[in-house]
Length: 346
Image 1 (cartoon, rainbow, N blue to C red):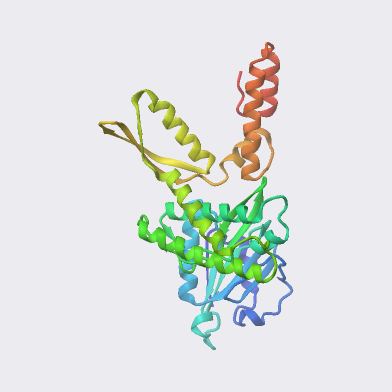
Image 2 (tube, rainbow, N blue to C red; image 1 turned 45 degrees about the vertical axis):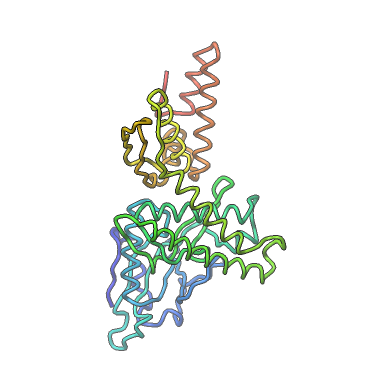
């Protein structure tokens, strides 16, 4: 039995005493727990609570386990929302070799406060489930494509969701069929979107059969809407536009601001001279994960989710602008100090 863990591995040391030689479905251990908000999986999946941390263990072939382990590590390095991989266990029982489709176990850290798409429909918490799920899934798929990842199995079932300031954020859970390329062609992106549309339509049909969809909702129309939203977001992030010299500075700033609001950054800005003006071309990349949450914590000590942090920071900026219009500059300095203890102004 061999273990391959991502460093540092000290937090997972307690997992070494689990009954690895036994098939995962037959495990008997006090650390096993049941998760109510668990998704649907084609593999055997169990959950273990050890030393204050909850882990998800998935039994699959060693080839797929090593592949998914490698891809999830890369996704983490690129700040693409995905479950955090801890490691893999292989050569589980050398005396009695397993079947090839279950001779390894992938270990990931359980995504706290996450929920499934079925739970979102059951408990929408003030959002429109269809709009929230589609927007979150489309944003995740665009982030993957910008990072050169072909998902190959994009679906609501292979995604977990977190509520964040009235919206949903999607996290990739299953990367078995994913591929990493320097960049994706239009054909690869279209194929991935086609697969996503087909799978989402099937999942919505299942919800309809369970009477969880409103009667006026057509699963195939909703699935097609995913394609339209993907194309609109991709166009906004990658389109080229011609700028007049007198508007160039303003238009570039506005475009970059829109990218930031959508959760993306420009890795490179290129201006190409043309007879009509300068053509603006952006090389877009995924923004650093948790940027606004870190900024808010540094400035105020408040620990909030990303969208909540973005809203609070915007409120701080707006209130500061209001105070600076007042005639009493001393009061403005005091308030800025209280709301921004590290980044003091004035």
